[in-house]
Structure formats: structure tokens, C-alpha cells
Amino acid sequence: MATSPVPYRNRIEPEPHGQGKKPLDPLVKTALSLSLGLILITIIGMILTAPDRSIPPYSVMAQMGEKVTVSVPPNTTDAQIEALLFRFRAALESDRDGFGRLKIKPTTPNDPGGHYQRVTIYVLDNPGLAEESALRDYLAGDPAARGAFKRSVRGIYRLTPGIEIGVLGYADEDVYFTRPPQALLHPPTPSLPNQALIPKDAPLPEIALGEANRPRILFQMQRGSNSHWLLQP
Image (cartoon, rainbow, N blue to C red; front, side, top):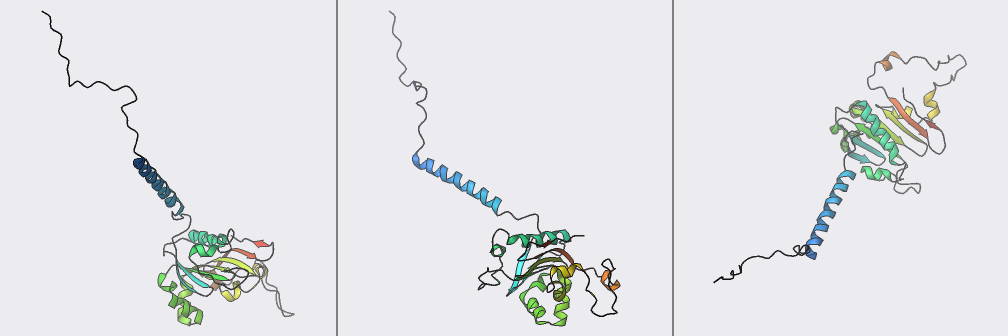
């Protein structure tokens, strides 16, 4: 007599197509969304806060009123100093308080025209001489302090209501920053009847030619007008 096969009770029947996946728990979905959002925010933050490679690393070391010292590494090139001075110039082009983003405190906080109507930034390659004590001695007129300070200055940026100027090297502030821009382009006119007129292309004195840190004007602008002077040899 034939017998019917005994059914295999433990056999697992295949589930219909599309019914084997369970939907993600809402808490899992929320956690994944938060994780992806944090990763995206971190990436954007790293891009926005990445150091600017077009200028040298620098630190604002001291500030006394309108005078500010900035320190750069000793091996900083003249081209990098030049780029940094142009960056200072661009700070106010888009924002009248742009120097605040450079960690410079307001220099003219009570001026209705803006918080940075007057500022002088000295760029030095010796952090010790960029300290507040060294800046104080320089401004006080101490001869030894002024000599050491001048030798370490790699560039100066000056902004006043009348002029904006950037100089590579140390520039005599009584000559470069107190005369109008036109006066820096031409030699002085004779003041005595028999005084010889100095030609515009006359060579500089021998002592000046031998100065390694002789200043070079990178840019100057007379504020309050449409006249610009951009000087580069």
C-alpha cells in the first residue's frame, strides 16, 4: 500500500517579494539625518575656516590706540608681506568694520565715520619686538628701542581720513605718512632763488642705495577723492 509523504513541518516558506524588509524605525531615521547634517556642517566649516594660503601666517601681538603690531615668521618673503599689506587694504572695502575680523580692536570707537578711521599696522618678523612693551618704547621715542624696532619692520599699513598707504620695509613716518601722495612722487621744489632743481630721475644718495630695508611704496590712495596711485617698480 502506498503511503503519503509526511509534510516537513520545519520547512521555512519563502516570503512574498517585497515583504521581507522592515521599514526603518523613526528614531533611526532621525539619528541618520542628524549624523549626515553634522558631517555636512563640519565639512562646510572646515572649508570656511581654512587658513588663507595666499598670505603668510600672522598674529596680532599688541595694540595701543591706533598703533598695531603684527608678527610674521622670520622666513616670510617680501612677496608674502606684500600680499598681507594688500589684504589689510581690502579689509575695509566690503565692510567698514572689516579690521574687526582681523582681531584688531576699534581704533576710533567714538568716530561717527567708523571705528577704524585711523590705524597703523606694523608688520614685524621678530615676535619679541612686536610685544606691547616694545611698541610702547618705540612710541615713547627711546633711541635703542626705535632702532631695533625699525630693523624688524617688514612693512607698514597706514590709514587716515586723508590717505591710505602700504609700504614694504620701514618708512620714516614723518616723511611718508604726513605728506600728500603727490609729494611722494616728485622731489621738492627749490625754495631759494639759486637752489638747483633736482631732476625727477636723479639717483638716490649712496647711503640710501646701500640700505637693505629701504622702503618701497606698494600702494597709496588719497581718501575722499577718486585719485588713486598704485606704485610698483
